[in-house]
Amino acid sequence: MLLVSSLLPAGFYVCVVLSWMVYRWVMMTKRGGCGVRMGNMITVSMVAVLLLLHPILRADYSIECWTKEHRTWTFGVALTSLLLWGLGIPTIGLAVVIKNRRNLQETETKIKYGFIYQGYRDSHFFWEVVIIYRKVILAALAV
Image (cartoon, rainbow, N blue to C red; front, side, top):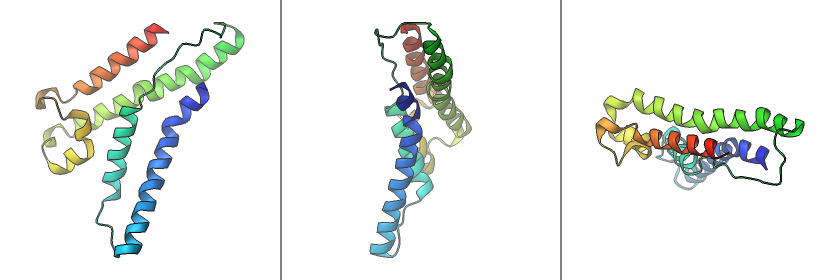
């Protein structure tokens, strides 16, 4: 189950890209044109999916802690997943929003990344990432 949870974000990415490619193909076939910028749609979809489905740790009391098998899973999969998905995704989101902080009110930026910062004052555009980090830290401490 841990391995499946660890690979889930990558699987969602593949599904999102394939879904938009099928949509574009259907629209090109029916209308002769799509009118949708695929890069924007993939970005918006991934931001939404990754933030909404941000990994949540669950306790499993049937596993004996710190056995050889537990350590292998802990350091091989769980810690890697926590760093990559738990901290990496919010960090990438923060970097993207910081890079675009001067353009937050432009339509293109709102379409792509507004999901992250809309609802906050312009001076607090980063606050969603702070909330995500807080959740990750609390989940890690609970385990």
